Length: 223
Image 1 (cartoon, one colour):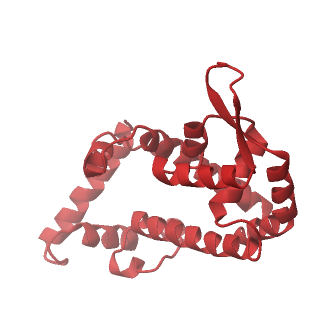
Image 2 (image 1 turned 180 degrees about the vertical axis):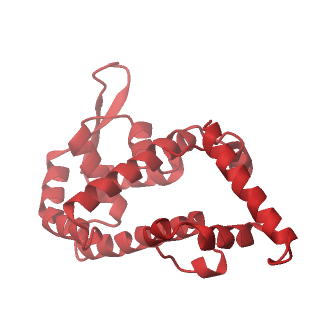
């Protein structure tokens, strides 16, 4: 826990409460606090602060991040659908599963499903479809001959290679106007989020308990 940061936040909160008590502000609230902080930040710090939709009305940075990630996912899926249009691929997940098997080698069904951050029923449907097309097959595990792992077939490699020019085009479009340094910085930030969320996803917490369980264990820092 970063106690120095926590103390700064508490001191800032007290300043806001004091200002509200003087009658110059509306009754204290989270939205009011955020707006007050934005107005009282040093000019240099405000200059480096990005804009986002609803910010002037007290919308939080966290809310903006969540919405923008959802939007980016939808944009990427739209380009992916265009990349597999008029091909043998049914969904974006079909070629993503094949790409993972080609890149990382054989793995169990659950390893492949978890790598793609999907629930078991959906993942099994994709695997069944790919096996039905002869694009993947089950082979004896290199670790335990009694177990089976999935491997991409020559037919799967050929299907993937045929579609790769359009898939690469779609992935290039997703990153849009970002410079190389911006792409690297975005990867670093997204990896940080991935490292945080992936263990939570793989812990299989019940949906009804997910928010309270994760919220109670979050430790904030300024790293």
